[in-house]
Amino acid sequence: MCINGARVIVNLHETGFRNIEVVKQRLQKFGKEKVSMAAKTS
Image 1: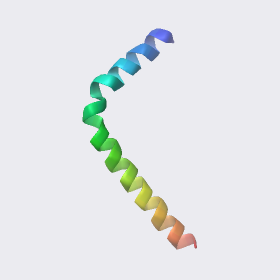
Image 2: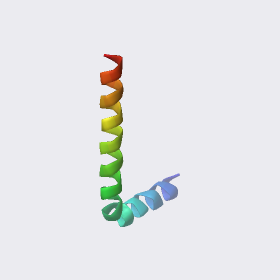
Image 3: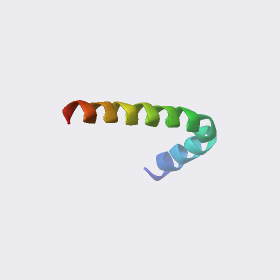
Image 4: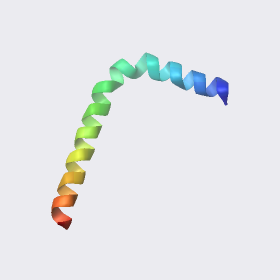
């Protein structure tokens, strides 16, 4: 568990800078979808 966790942290650290933009886009898309769903239900 500890070794796998450390490996995951290292992988996140190495790829984080490249993935930040992807995560931002996903969060923006997810946020827009939630907003549109909230608008439909309300």
